[in-house]
Amino acid sequence: MIEKFLLAFIPMFVAIDPIGLVAIFMGLGTSASSEHRKRQALLGLLTGLLVSIGFIFLGKAIFAALGITVADFQVAGGLILLALAVRELVGYGRVDRDTDDEFGVVPLGMPLIAGPALLTALLILIDSVGVVYTLRSSRSRFATPIGSRG
Image 1 (tube, rainbow, N blue to C red):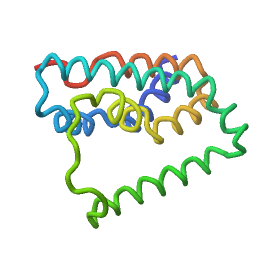
Image 2 (tube, rainbow, N blue to C red):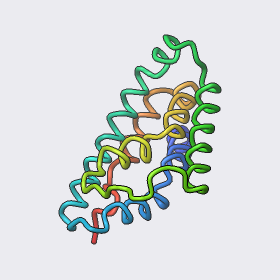
Image 3 (cartoon, rainbow, N blue to C red):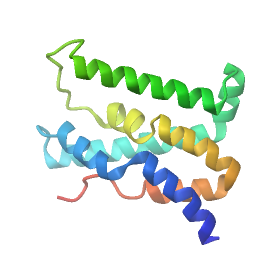
Image 4 (cartoon, helix red, strand yellow):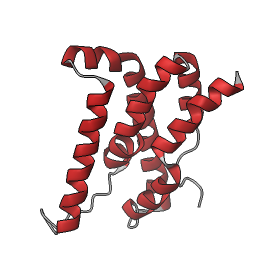
């Protein structure tokens, strides 16, 4: 039982990358008050949790309706991330970015917490360890808000 939990928890931990998220979260909320950062962290966690649970139950149906496989999704996600990285490196696009105080849902919740890596890992984990252990480890993974202390 603990083995299946760890088989589900470790890939999700790596896909979410909570250590890297702390730095990004602190950069997003530099001008926000402590209370506002806590509210945005909770909003981001709830968004990530809801998207992840929805994808657990609807992901395969969505992929079947679109006619794509998990491998297609992995390649497309990698290409999108590559394009975004190249755009940042060469400085293409707007230089004066608007700093928004509302960062809980986007970018924290959806692309950072529940991004392509986590969604792909969830689809693979459902097949390997089952829905129950995947849900259990995702629920424990989202238990503590990022940066809520301090």
